[in-house]
Image 1: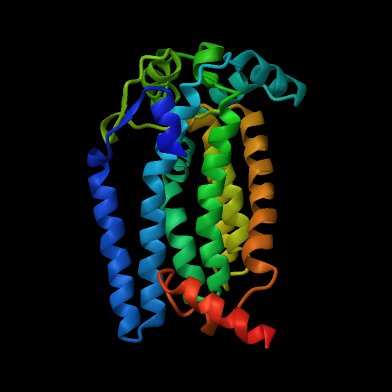
Image 2: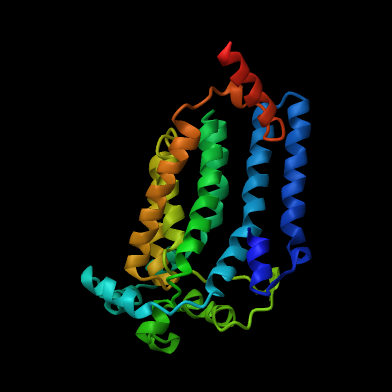
Length: 303
């Protein structure tokens, strides 16, 4: 689908530039096969989870650029009005955060912990023998990213720092790198000047809904039953969602929309992965053998 859309838009995808991601994904995937052959079920699934997460990175980023390249009207005015209806003064909030350097550093760490959480949570779920939720989490991560890209087709925005006119020189301690850094790539994609997508020009360019917030709430839901770790991981994820306002240039309504996407994802994953969850032993095989094992189990149940 992504390849078809890119061809229709006249945009070339430089797959070769993404070789580091594919190489890493294949390394862990074939490692999972080898570990399964030697009877190492848990290490095999850990490697497979890493492979799946890494494999998602390329199509996720490419989909965001294709979405923005559709060129629908900019909706920053609508997003600012939505924040106003929520009673949220974005500018006052940013200037208040700017008074506290330690808070700024803390929120920066929380914002940057995005990929660590995406990788860590499924591994912890596998170790906890909650394999259905682990694979469901990875599926949910991809679902959140792709659904957010689809939504953003009709809601492209240049984000809050630009729209409210808060410049880097207006702030004493905060350096809004993300708030302005993505605009060059956003404008190239939005203005129809994007001819090639490669690893060299990728950056997060979606505003509504916030993928950071969506993934944060998704982590909270998925990790809530982890013994001893559910609360700290959930608290960290909530801070990551909050950090998207100041360090990602998001409106408050973006965070609310991210929460909605996470709720939709939870419903989908529950239906597909968790409602009739197999036991751990039924999940012992990596995905390259799953279709056959599922077929055999299905035949056994119908006898």
